[in-house]
Image (cartoon, rainbow, N blue to C red; front, side, top):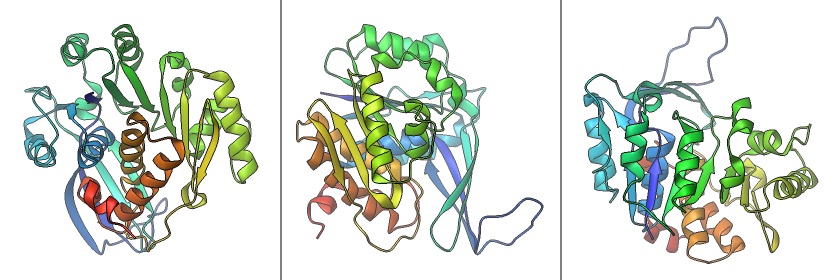
Length: 301
């Protein structure tokens, strides 16, 4: 089994601040750093660090070559990534406050410049039982989902950042959904924010009714994480350790959870393992740099 992550790659500029800047306000940062990021790249790094055979396909400019080198150092195969002469690498401006919470501004760059030829080239060597991982930071998603489904790939989808257009995608072809509270509310059409345990369980049941072919994972921040499949609903609380930076926490969770699910370890084990991995990640600074290795997750206590 191989994983193809077809997604975004960004150069992250992270500013540590006392608080997230308000409208009309100018503040000074405590520090600034440049790092590798993008949901697709982070998810590829997470899967690779979990021990999986991972290929990443993104579209970057020449300014992103150092990010590809970093992915390669984690064991991600970057041979299919497209380096464009005309597009610049996507960028993200990230504010991280004194509590570890973040606010992010994205500039898509090459992430929104995929062509049909790019997609055909990315998918051509993958087939039945291989896994395609997607998020919502790239273009041509309907076409990618259709093409992957026709090739009998397992499709895992993280619809982030969430937008109303998500509901127009061919979601009946998705095998695994990875959602946060807002995405779960949007896709379930529950009509109210998810705040209590009963809200999450109601949304999960609505989602399973809408997408009976899918396993659906919902992360609920400090409230833990939920999963529904044909066996019912599983829940795992967070692993509560001091938070330094939440950037990339969801991507870490996805990589380790999907790895466990595809190994047949079951929903409860997958949630618990992913919760450990994401807890370790948020205790560190950065995005893909903060993602723990398989041995770190195995040895956590």
